Length: 110
Figure (cartoon, one colour):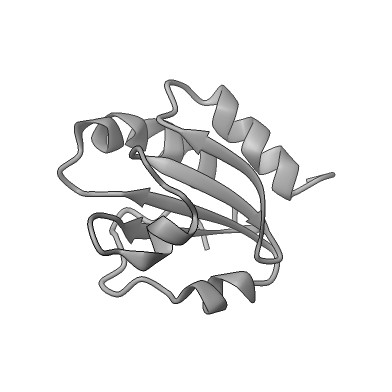
């Protein structure tokens, strides 16, 4: 799976996220968030050719349990997972470098 432009209609349960195999990037934000919109070109560029990384885009907000379980406070927050475990995190990326570092952390040798 490569870059996903749309938020999921229904977020996965935390238990399902914890069971994910391989490399995954969870992106928390909203469609109307200016910071989220500004970061999309960087996120898309980092993920569009990465067939080895799943991208799960989750709409966050009050009452959204998945974001709370990861301690998300600012949008966008990208959580880099390897086999369901957090390896790295990037909050409000301002360029491609932090995203590349996160991807390297979850796909060593790739």
